[in-house]
Amino acid sequence: MRLTLLVPELLWPEPEDDLAWQALDCPALATLLQRSELQRRPALAAEAQAARWLGPTPQPLGALRLLGEDGAALAPDTGIWLCADPIHLRLHQEEIIVADSRELDLEAAEVETLAASLNAHYAGEASFHPMTASRWYVRLETPWAAELPGDALPPLSAAAGRRLNLPTPADVPSRRLLALMNEIQMLLHSHPVNEARGERGLPAVNGLWLWGAGSLAAAAPQAGAIWSNQPLPRGLARAAGLQHHPLPASAHSLLQAGPAEERHLVCLDDLLQAAQDQDAQAWRDALADLENRWFAPLKTALAKGRLSQLEVVAGTSYGDLTWQASPRQIKGGLFSFLAGKPEALQQLARRLAAA
Image (cartoon, rainbow, N blue to C red; front, side, top):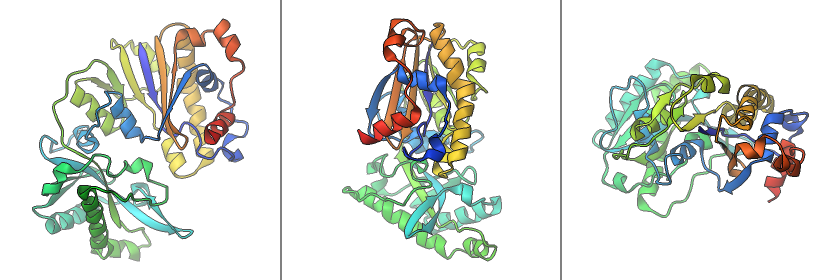
């Protein structure tokens, strides 16, 4: 069995933040990383990393996430689809910070009213479809939408909790997308829903983050399985004809299930929210939990040959990092002797930051 763990924010983004790193004890993870081969590439959001597992061809992430929505009344069979996730832009120390829907706590009636207003305003140009309070979609019906690159904006997960940093695109479709976002922001600014929220001391829904443009195309069936509780990986599995399973409680549960497939992708987003919120203690707690439930049992399984390969993929502030290990590298002997004592995770972060 070949297993890929997708673990965004595996390394805390500040290498000198002792609150995050001090006395951090993750021996199994440290050993896995120390004895693995590391490949470092430019930073990539977790959603794009999951899609890359199926191959290097860029994927329409918005359409795929919609495909993975359980109980959706519409399917992204035709047209150009994007994720249109509600955001709150707030001023912090003279910078505009992007906050995702966790700060909004939208009610169902508010979602319905906002979407109805947007659909009335953009009739014939765009149609907005909220699936949940936090996950919305838009189908663009404008001529320029077909030329819109899928990476015009990164996924919201790569922007949430960070300073607003919009690109300055050279292509016309991307510029029109940013103009549409700005127009939506102005439309929402004085919306009665936001006025009522302001009176109750709640943050305004003052924008939609439009990302993952593209149309769904037929994909060649692939072999393997994806384990996740999120709609995008579920959509990837459905599009590629892969098996999809809910995320198991631990590596033990996955291995005991004895899945027949050879290739497996496991999506662990436990660290992402803490990193977005800059909550070092929550990140430490989540990492310790992953150490117990995933890294330690997988290290043992790899050493015993129950896995033929373990790959750990992490989108971090240090780049898109991939570690790959075989049983020979983990189980001991000359290789482990030459590898020496595992490097502390903070030291690894410092080394990557300096490189």
